[in-house]
Image (cartoon, rainbow, N blue to C red; front, side, top):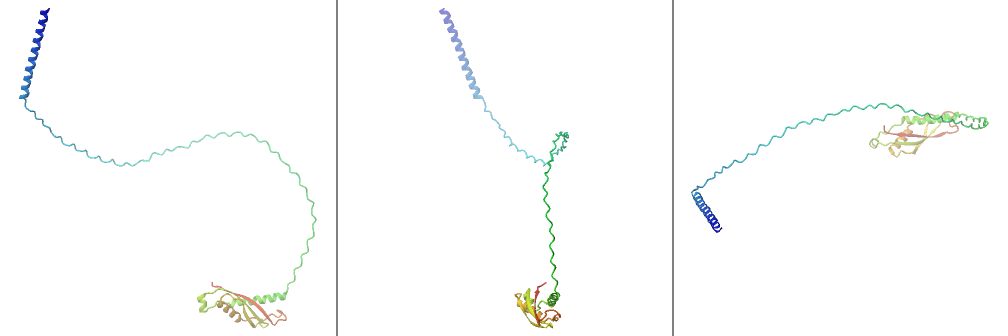
Length: 222
């Protein structure tokens, strides 16, 4: 047994020495290869910078077409049959009660109409004479044509009184109420004083030798 064990030990030592020798030889060979190797030059080529692509042209604007209008046909509903109506009961007719008839009032005889007072022919003649005098003075009235009147253009009415005798001659005259303008007052008084008056009618103003009259003269610019 000891012999076998020693034999194994010697075989193992031999194998180990063989492996170590192979490793030393391999390492020397590698050192020689590295010493004899030449340096390798690496050539790096520079690549050109990439050119940015040209911007694409914007698309041409397209006209917006309006959406098609949907025409909806009106829906026709079928007419519903009329509902049967219930007959209404007849409304009772109210009979109005007869109103009591009032007794007829007695008819009185119409009152007698008083007879109109008889006209006074003398008063009519006197009134007609006075109206004729006023109409005559209105016809001869003239707006004053003085320089002062043309500058101021006064307007108004003048009330005057004047006295005539039975022959129609002017006895006196004056201003009852002025127009507020001396120009118009003087013009109205001159109109009365410059008039020619008819005599009194025969039956007018009995027992009076003179009579006082009044007149109103208006002065307005047309």
